[in-house]
Image 1 (cartoon, one colour):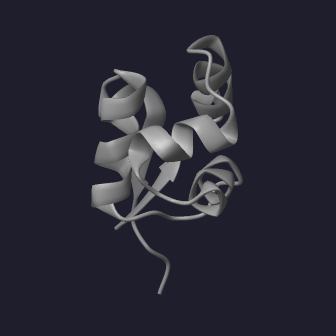
Image 2 (cartoon, rainbow, N blue to C red):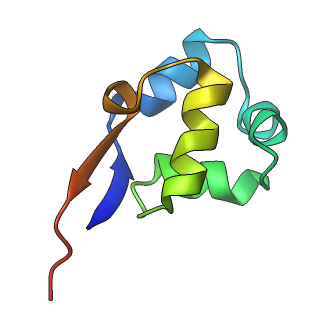
Length: 70
């Protein structure tokens, strides 16, 4: 399985008042991690959880789970 951000992720981040760097600080990750999330790169479940907590949103509002292609 792979976890990727929905297209609404960036919109929700901006609405909540976070810059990429600000969200990264709130998640305790580096800014490139947030940048990669917004670019649709697969992320680990722990990173998705941190994003949900920082943005105070449910997982299904921010992310989608799909099967990995072999």
